[in-house]
Length: 301
Image 1 (cartoon, rainbow, N blue to C red):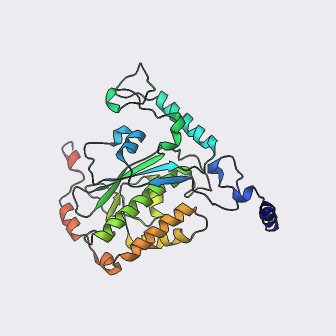
Image 2: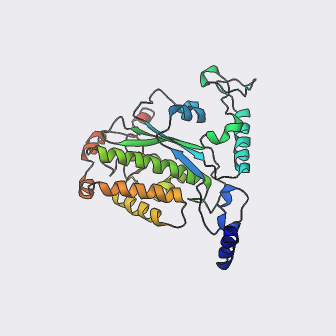
Image 3: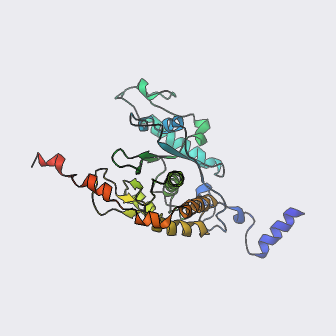
């Protein structure tokens, strides 16, 4: 009886019972025009265990990795249809079969092992959902106190696969966006607990053509001067507050996206706005005044 009432209610508002609960093309072969974006394609884990990052790409774990680094990993959620996981497992197998480490060009192994053995590292296909599709790291700057850098960002999803139902226009941009949001949230938690850490200019990022647009949608500003860490974007308090406030109320975003944006707005609201806006980078400028970006090539001129 309850099922009949639900179906009749959907029919009254002009929604097909199946289409009403569709989650978008990213979840499988569903219609293009969906009534609601009710589910999350991805789930995140932050901070993530270093073993999960090693499972994604062993080469990301380098000698400069410290216990203070914050890693984030993005996985496909269980809301995706089984054929999505099968497709990911297929592409992962293709990558494994054509990748050889440490110059071994004659023998390709498909065994799960460490990178130091000189063989291919592959994941168990039956556990494809447990392998991240995107990872990133938030690490403290070695040159500037109170400044952190987002780096080691990787994503296995193709940026060319456009999907208007995804946040940013593709699964690639949505997964990268989840990484950025989680690391911004982690940095804001540090700002709240440590008054010496400022959000204004506190996060730096070396962006690309794709990630640059994602950062812009989240209030990051482009830098005007070249610095020693070669970053292209940095956090902006007022712009991020406005952008994330818009994202938290947008009905075109999935629930997870709105929830993360709302948490970020909440943490931004806890910061002293006048203290953030009055914080200057004079100390940083003094350290970088003597930096010559052409020093490495002057000896060839």
